Image (cartoon, rainbow, N blue to C red; front, side, top):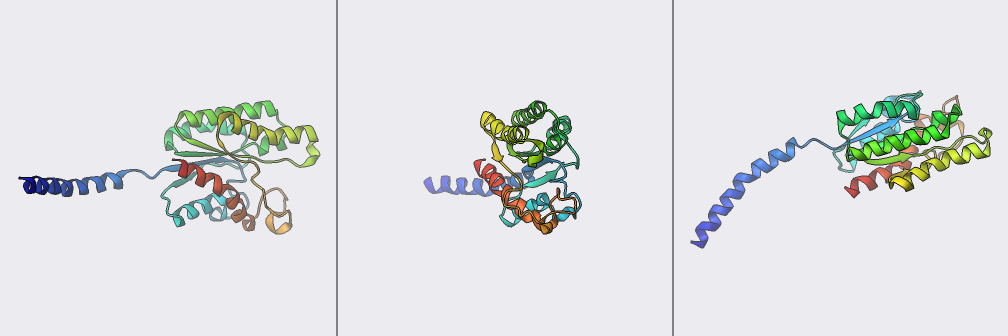
Amino acid sequence: MLRSRLFKLFALLLLCLPLAAQALAQTPAPKILVLGDSLSAAYGIRAEAGWVALLQERLRKEGYDHQVINASISGDTTAGGNARLPSLLDQHQPAITIIELGANDGLRGLSLKTMRQNLVQMTRLAQHHQSRVLLIGMQLPPNYGAAYTQLFSQTYQHIANEYRVALVPFLFKGLPDDQEHFLPDNLHPSEKAQPILLETVWPGVLGLIEER
């Protein structure tokens, strides 16, 4: 009797295995949405050489099946990103949302209060969609004044602390300030700089993946 029951159980398990495999195959790969400006849109270089494209390659090499969606637009501000994010979240349902915006707000001398409000709204909206957030910060040149530049860089840290999201304090950390790593405009990183940018962002992305 016991042997008969075990045989039936084993047969049932064998029948269930193909169904389980099929269900796994049909499960869509988790998505990573990158909402940024020219620094993430591969401005002035080949798209496949940008750090976002390199992120996709790194994920595959590391054995992760995540699909990277690059929704970055050159020249975009936090206001533009805030306006675009709702439809992007509805469309892609990303597991992780990377927000790399604010540089153009700062370079244009826009209101830091408004910039903060936009970043907060994007962060909260992504969290509402069950998407984990990685906030990427920037810094401004000193000619914008000590008070403005300090408050600008602190904005990212304050939001990360308040809303408990992952933070890359400065995208250009470790990036040499020379002609090889920047385009002639001295603002946008060259192709040679992109792997360095990825190394700066990668720990934050990996941390959110493993957190899941």
